[in-house]
Image (cartoon, rainbow, N blue to C red):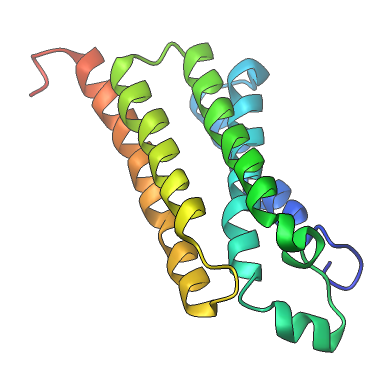
Length: 164
């Protein structure tokens, strides 16, 4: 895709997050797009954030060999683009939670926590430092862990005191 379009990170996001739709269908027996749609869209937006950061490591080599990426497309405007995609991710995560009747732990941990972590990433990343881009890319494991932690906390609260 990098030879065809400046948007290979979008193609990756569309493919990589397909599991949200399949997983939702497998767990619920149907595809409720009011929940799975925002979940999928948010995942695509998150992929654009972390894979664009990753792509900034390779931009010098990409130019030399003539391949494309969102890092090259966005250039000096990368911070604004990624802020938009991060906001989309957090908003779609919150919407999916609302449509799925998630509770306060989800919003406090998953939504606010991922927003805080992505804010830190985007405010501190040095797009011209490959080592820093790699570190910020890897820190997205924490983004996923924070999201998961809020879901677990919410499930435990909903299960009530008999579970603990």
